Image (cartoon, rainbow, N blue to C red; front, top):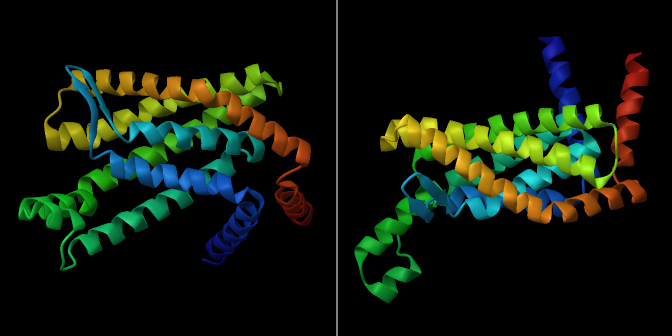
Length: 251
């Protein structure tokens, strides 16, 4: 028990130092993209035969780009920790939305339409369904771990610091992790609760992953410039020094 307690304290300290060293704007964009993607997944963007995209797609590529730049600068473990923080915040927001949806009172749109169905629909949308929230959380955390490990592994294998290397590790990790994300969510939620066939699960997961990858390809140059600026300005050096001091003490 003492070892477990010490491990938790060490990881908590590591997390606090890490969050102090990652630029707050990056953390903000990451968490907001996770929360917005989860909320906007309630609305269809495209639904045609085997092609199905929800409006969460507009935000999902942002979270993967944030993970890529964090992984490039601070490593896979740091990326997974920040993803866990984003998941906790997202679940907290969903829980708060669910409680507020049950609160008495009407939405503003009710007074515009004077239709009780509008109020019920908005409560259901923001209140969410437990299986959608949990399925989304499981898919996000699984894909985050896959993305971080692949991104880091490819980066170590390539051993280059140029844009091509950044693009390679980002694109490969993103397409596979997005496929995992879509597949887990479609299997846990769409197949079980909405009656999707396995063909729909596989095809929609693949098409969604490709579409999300294309968005990241479009903006990956921005991510690369951000990372290069961090490296030139030595952003996050405090965390690296903290890790070195821990290894010296352990040694």
